[in-house]
Image (cartoon, rainbow, N blue to C red; front, side, top):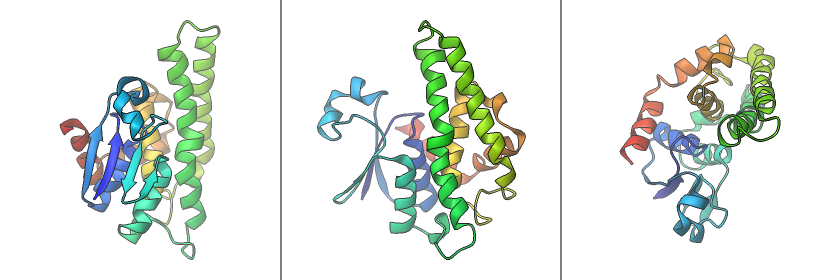
Length: 205
């Protein structure tokens, strides 16, 4: 059985959401955040002390977007991944990685200076620049939205990857910075039963 180490509200939610969408059995361990400081025993399992950590037999993965693709291609319905010979394959890969590298990174910068280090030199300016960068990246990608979904005209792991970034932005108070097209996308994503099951699993744990 797959085992997932997760912290509430962290990037590891992508993996939890993918597991619920695929209907795979799993064991969930929810750790206080950040686990490298709040859960010292976890360092014996993952010396980096980060989440997510997905263990599947001898396989171990720690990148949230990679976990989504791994689960979709190794265990689940092929509809969650886009095959190389399908239309939309390039969009699928692009948005799968953009969700983390392009959209989530400026949000973590904003969190650092708006919440964790507000008294650092230039913190307010740095936080605002990060927020503007997040919005700008979404705006330049909005024209690529294919109706409800990001790739192949169906729900895929790319929607999970980007959906988490939109969720994080909403939670930290930047929901009003999300362009209308992506705001509509997120509303559709969080209405999915798989998303709701993942949130409930997180609450139960």
